[in-house]
Length: 105
DNA sequence: GGGGTGACGCGTC
DNA sequence: CGACGCGCCACCC
Image 1 (spheres, rainbow, N blue to C red):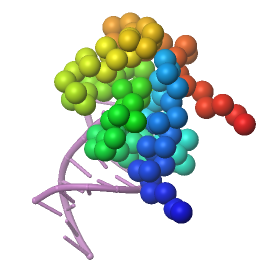
Image 2 (cartoon, rainbow, N blue to C red):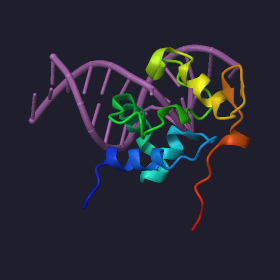
Image 3 (spheres, rainbow, N blue to C red):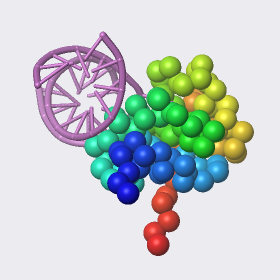
């Protein structure tokens, strides 16, 4: 069955392991096209299943959480990440250390 | 069916 | 280094 762009995006986000983060572009690329970064943002915005879709593990390319609304009320995303052992410096994630690398099978 | 917007990314000025 | 524009897709009016 053909999964919609959103479904693919959600599938990728769900695969993000504990204690790691991914960028919108990364998710978009794994979903099929890196140009979907914008769609990824929208997809997480609607986030139909926040319980399975850890949108807080998705940050922008700078390792910075969304400077916009931040899906819950600001620093909630940061708190959740820190709770997983992710070190955030001034709200920035050390991407070189925590950026999720999709295992190459 | 058309137009505008958005939780992004990258190139260019 | 900051600001702006473009692209790409999905959604709302």
